[in-house]
Image (cartoon, rainbow, N blue to C red):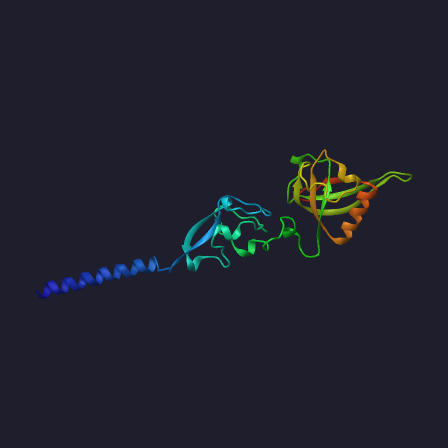
Length: 212
């Protein structure tokens, strides 16, 4: 009888020790929460819809700060950074509610200006950098650099209703895409003058060209 009791106690100790090792390897992480994730890769500037998003449950302890709980809470908002497929969506990646897709990407102190061009649609994409040159005719024909190292925020097709926002004679060009570029206030003024009295040409910068 005594041997049976000793064996039973030994078995209990062994089993309990094994349970503790399992618990240590797989600790209790607490309750789970629902978070919104990207259903596919989404680039910066995307206006979100519920169809672009889905939800998953993860331990609350692992939820990123500011995680969005439901796709409906993010619908209509603009992404201010790229989001990978399956990545949790957070408030820090979203522009303020009711901010437009261009205004959401304009940093403080800069401006977004639409520049009609002769470029084909496949020649440039958002994130590229460009230089703008103005050519003037008249009695002293010449060309000059208006601005360099400008980031392209968006590429608008010639059929887009926003392609000719800035007006002017240069805005009548419809044989290429229009570029929405970021400029500082001084460059915006020079560009407005150049579009009024000259013609704008675009040079696309390579990735190895330093920008100001």
